[in-house]
Image (tube, rainbow, N blue to C red):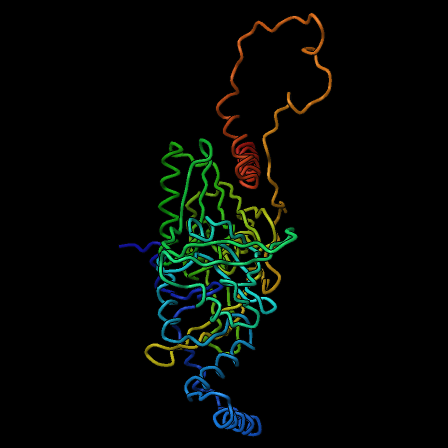
Length: 437
């Protein structure tokens, strides 16, 4: 009995990557073998004195647990935007997150200069439907300033009972005044993979988030698109725009689906257990048909692993704008049955050795966020035409409609210009591949 690529990969790892919920359940066993470093006695003495002063003199009584947990949160938040202490509620929600069903607004967020930056809204969620966009800076939640709140505290304020309303005040580049959005909380059910046939022989797959089953779902959608194309899928657009990341094993599986061999991604950190590498296994579900990968500033973490691997192996052309640049790895270290530490333990690197931390993936073809609008040439063109001349001959031919294919292309250009350009590029690549045979 043979094993599929996915069987091998699932057995290899259950790690996760992303902006808000990251890396799996691996405990760094190697740290126990290291010699303990000497304790900073002076600093610990200062901490003890401050703790005592607060207990004695703060205007209101504060219990020990609140003070200690607050100290832990502050210690971790000073390290980087992704390390955090997970209390029982946060730890439980992290476990639920990769299942694709959870409560909230449907946005992935990070910290920037004391404010909350939207990394990306998740497809078909209240935040996306309300008009929240990647790059928006949240400055108020229900009219309360978020300045100097921790990321966890801000996220907790945005959570709530499904059906309740929240008002987000945001600053958006290009807008002279802050914008206010009313968003209704809901249970978020994320459909990780969607597909459609753009034109006969040309497929489109959208991955909104990398979940445990994403790799298998992508392969199933490829089979469906191939069947719709009469068994001949000439090319594929893989859309990773506004995909904030997710499960590492899924990113590896998706990359491996299109690669025959070679390194996909590797991680390096101080602890030996944090050094890992993942390689492709034989078999390309597209049979080397051309690919275009769409990315933007909301493409982060696991999305950058996939686009970076396909770019380094020259398997796909990456098109769009520079990605988010989230190239660090977090490990979940359980502390008790219901609490844990989320700690940045490594950086990940693309096959060519690139660290994209704070740099991002630079597309092969840069494409700004251009929008195309339909223009009525007759109403907007002021130049003189034959029809404006006195006693001109009438046109006795019957009006012919534009071919259906042209109508669909025009509609796609207006609806999603980057996708329209990706399809045109894909068709060109397919033509070149055919000529080269």
